[in-house]
Length: 370
Image (cartoon, rainbow, N blue to C red; front, side, top):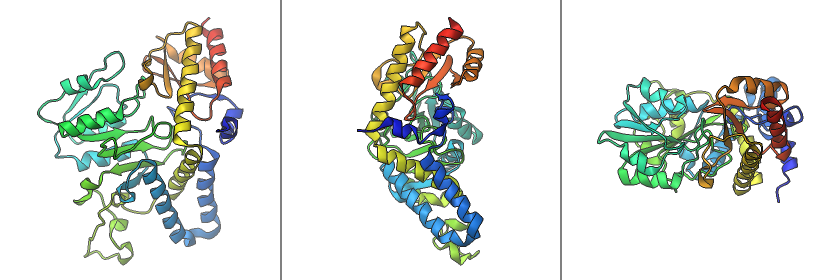
């Protein structure tokens, strides 16, 4: 049995405000922050003498991340954010055909492809969801790549990854997943779901802060040289031989040079916390709090724009409202942090929230909008 109040102690921000915005940017957990601080203290006190130790710890985190999404260690690269990872994928797949994606995608999923000159077709939502049948209708003979978020940032719609991965396999599409709004609170198995590429930032649900991110590249895409390389991409970086570019055949080649150690270590600390809690417990907790939130909103007569079917629910709930910004500002002044997105106010719940947070939001909404 998880003691959720103990988990809440990992997040000191909860003593200062009702934080209902992990979909925008989550507070860091103590487990994550301490690992970043540890690096800075080591560099402060000992300079670069910890280099070998930092390299080893980087590989330890790489293995943790690989295990977390059921990948091979050689299939994992560290990035600084989702856009960084998606740009790398767009260059790898430059010759692979047109892109099909969802109309609600965050620009991190689309701008990198547009910047390479790729033709993109957008699937339109049906009442906020993207049925596989509608995605299939949008295919053209030129479509070679499907880009989709696991959870859509502006609606909270959660896609069925198993179904979508099987669809991509049958249609011979490269499946690119933006897991930013889901990884940490919903499980990802890159092998079971037939995912070719996956990107995410640790800023949101993983509670690892800015500058932390990851990229999964399925092993079959590692056979050829990747489009980015640097001195640490070589089989033996220590040789520093300008006449011998003997590159490794693993995803970390794209990291190119010196690693962003503190962000990687923070991600490792965050993964340690999530592994201690357990994936099933985390998913159930977030879905429970989402249900409590939606029930409370229904009680006070506030309309919800997010999908209501349980299999499509996520940690995001959209309150339908025509002019949300003034209400968001007023809530912030009253100690409740949410954001304006999609059709109104986006409220997101995570492992550090509880029923009291939801009750506070509900009470303040009633006071503000009557």
